Structures are given as C-alpha cells and as structure tokens.
Image (cartoon, rainbow, N blue to C red; front, side):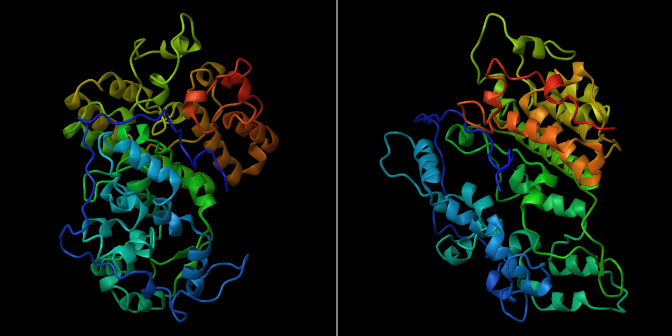
Length: 441
C-alpha cells in the first residue's frame, strides 16, 4: 500500500534549542467532557459489527468489522508509541531535560492520532477511548445524541425533514457527498488551527522528524478500504445505491477542498505566531546545496518571482492546476506578499474566491513542464492517475509506471518521497522528457 503520498519528506532532524519551549498536554486538564461514546456503540453484531471475510463487499451491517480489520486510521494511536514517535519527542525536548514526554500525552499529537475531541478532555480518563485511534466519531461526529436515532434514517421515511437536517440536529456529520467527505479529511491531512484542538504540522515538528503533510484526496481514497456503500440519502425513500464517484470529479473536488484548507490555514497562521510559518514554504527552497550555476536558478527565474525568494509550498496549488484554472496571476500575488501578514491574508482571500473554477486536465507545454518542482510533478502525476481512472484510454499506463518510478527515485541511493532529492542524480530526466508520451489523446 505504498504511495508517494503516504509519507512526506523526512527533513534533517534538528534539536530544538532550550529557549524554544515545547508544551505538552498534562493529563488531568479539565474541560467539558466531549460527547464521545466510543466504538463499542458501533461494534455490536446487530449494528455494524457483522462478520466479514477478505474480498467481501462492505455493507452497513459489517462496516465496523471491515474498518477495524483494514483501515489504517484504526492504528493511528498505536503509531504514537513506535520508535519514530519517541525520537520525534526526544528531538522536541530541550537537551537539558532528561524526562522526555510521551507522544500519547501530547495534545498536538492526539489531535490527529485519535478522535480529536478527546484531546481536549482529561487524558487519563479518556485513555481507553484515545487508544481506539481515529475512531468512528472522528469523522461521523460525537455519537452521544445520534447513536439510537440514526438507525431509523436508513429506511423509507415520510418525514418532511430532510435526512441531512436530521444529521445536523443530532450532531452527526453528513458524509454523503464528495465535498463534505473531503472536508472531513483536511483538518488532519492539511491542517486547521482556527478551532480546538489545534491540528498543525509546523516547521518545528517537521524538523523533529514528522513527515510533512502531502495530501491528495483521490489517491488517498483509493488506498483506504471503503467501509461504506455509496448511496443517495437525500431522497425520502430508502437510500438508493449510486456507485463510486467519478474519479476525475473526485480529484477535482479534492483539489478545491485541499487548496481552500491550505489557504485558510495560511490566514490563521498570519494572525499570530512565527511568520512566515516555514512549513508553508517550499522545503526545497532552502534544503539544498548552493551552487554557482544551477537549474534551481532557472526554475526561480519566472514571472512574479525574484531569485532568492522562497516560494510557497506548491503542493496546495501546483503548477498544473494553476495553468488549467488560469489562477497563475493570483498565485504570484500570494507569493509576492508572504513577507507581510496583512498582504498575505488579502492575497489568500483573493485566491480563495477562485476556488471552484471549472477546469479540466490537459497536456502542458514543454516550457510549463520544465518549470515544475517535485511537488508540481507529483501532483501532475496524481492528476493523470485520476484521468486514467475516469478514462483509461486517455493515458498510457506503462509510461505512468515509469514516471512513478522516477518520482519515487527507486534507482537512486537516496531517501524516496522527498522533494529534497528531486533531480539529485545527473541522469534524472527533465519533466518535459519525464512526462513525454503519457497522453494518448
């Protein structure tokens, strides 16, 4: 299940100086108890805990069984106890302190490696629920008020109240269309600091060894075993099976939702804290060797950017999407304004207004291709995967396999999945040659 998205680059580890204090949660912090009841309310044999076997289609009666057996979210809390997490916490702890806090006691870790609402309460009292990982209620909402009533929403109804309103009134998250589903993902997989608990992988955490967030919705949804049936629940009769969403439409929605979340995160970071937040910039802008003459200089010499300026993290708004949606100009305005909190907020607002512009993936010119960073190239590849999923005849599958091999740098003696290793080898082909022949028509 390996993907160029599953792990972002592990940048050089850096110890945090003593003056940079890292605050961890103290078990016993008292706040209003979250309306979380735990997965036991879903796992009964008569609810969603029916028997399941490998290869068996998942339906409502065995949704929990399929999820707990195959979905990586179920193991999210356990990750906090592995060697990598312990190393990250050691790196975040000032050197003169001998006691290293556990990631399982850190609100910033628990905000995404468990059901987020639980991170706000008494950690000791919530420990059993925290250990369930990113459980049902992380996506579906706290079940205290809907555990019983929601069973009636799956059958025919003569009620004038739409099902979506019933979900809202009982605190259950509506996940029955692609946009709402993508919005449920981006809090953890892109970041959100406007609400509690704060969900953010900042530069300090990346420097300590946490992978950066490189989320592309369509590809992730292909990797996650679906524990639900695709049905239309907006009608008054029984839910009607619809089949999986169109791959290209799902990709496009993912691009819009993820870009919107990234811009919202940027605006929130501009309000307070370190500025600019280095995690919002292109890792490769700084993490490379300086050379008297380099292809990086040619890459930087483009309209709207001066040599030496660090570009914004292009994963959220890669060059292909900027070209296809004709948002290049507004993107350049954002890059030019990053030195100022106020100007960056205004530029982000202008870019947000363009989200939703209808566009279709198409061939790029050689000049456009050769301006790509690793992020641009990886996102272009993933867009072509969506095109192939929707229209297999449009894309050459064998050529795409070759592109993937190069982007993962399997033939290089370097760490894969890292923009910092993009074009390290002298034999790495320029993007115009790398993507040559992938479009059949």
